[in-house]
Amino acid sequence: MCSVRSVIYDDRVVINVSGMIFETRQTTLSRFPDTLLGNEEKRSKFYVPEFKEYFFNRNRSAFEAILYYYQSSGRLRRPAEVPMCIFKQEIEFFELGDEVLSDIRLKEGYLSINESPRELPENKLQRKIWELFDQPDTSFAASCLAIFSVSVIVVAIAVSIAETVPSIREKKADFANFADTAEEPVWSEDTWFLLELAFNTWFTIEYLVRLFTSPNKCSFFTSILNIIDLVAIAPFYVSLLLTKSEASSVAALRILRIVRVFRIFKLSRYSKSLQIIGYCVFESFRELGLLILCLFFSVIVTASLLYYIEVGSEKTDFHSVPATFWFSIQTITTIGYGDMVPSQPFSKTYVGCLCNIWRGDSRAARPNICIEFQYSLLQEHVGEGRGS
Image 1 (cartoon, helix red, strand yellow):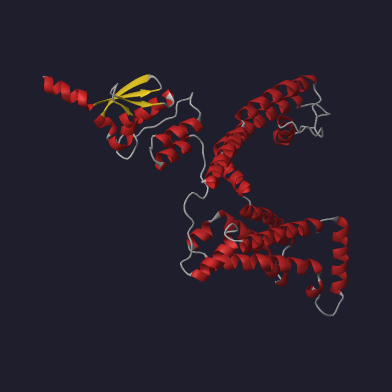
Image 2 (cartoon, one colour; image 1 turned 120 degrees about the horizontal axis):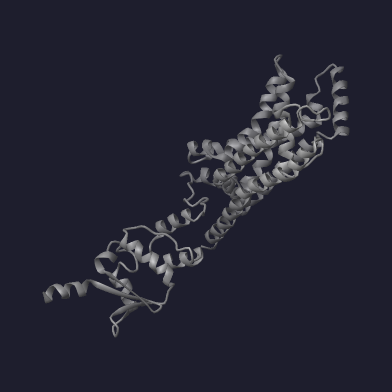
């Protein structure tokens, strides 16, 4: 009987965390031998022989969760009263491991960008070209090339915007009419075409160089940033084919010109902040969907009620429920153009009360809070990565 008691006593581990006593067994801690508590040699420097206990001057509430991690064979959850920054320090102190830290950060809403090591080509020349065009932070030359690419993108966007100015568009039309009467084609003399040709030539060269020097062609084609680059380049060549062919369509050319707006998204390749915002929006799709669903219900209900209240009135602007959608949308979203207004007293009261109540319900979803929260967490995460 005494031998059994001695075995139980020897297996028991007493841990003092800032004055609070915790007791567990060695077999429980040994489930994770690579951690601070699971390794006898690591935790021996915290042993106090006079009291036969291990003393840690750490956060008590956080330690309860960490001790339960051993007792539950790997379940870890942050206590609500412990901030994430403190809990992260406790996880690192007790050496639970990077995988555990990554899991808890993911549960808490942290996102991950470029955590995996960069994949580089094996060929030295190919690697240098790849880093020059795709990794702006690897050298001074790569940074200069990135600045040049950003400048080209900005100028291309400015030109596409300036092209829509009425005075400039009229001059361009007059020049085109003059060109139709000329004996020789004037594509080479068209300044706007030459600018577009120059921009797209650089974008094409940049895309093809990164494609041929990419270490992983499959990852290259599936990358969102590379898809954006391809979408920004393709309209120029498609419009050329349509212009030269007899089946050219004004609507198709107009759509292709609209697609050129994707050039602005090319800037996200050179801006970490824009990438963070993109990832945050992507991770907040569920909250955004909830907002859209609330808006959808609100618009249908309010538009239907308003239509049936106004039906029969000669001065009404609401001739059908779909026609009333626009008024409900601009009222709920606080735009309020005033192009459509109710005429009945009851509907005016309804608009002032019910629509504004629903506006508050729609705002209750607040997906922007989620996006701001994810953005702040990810900024902290990226800052830690730079610091390390």
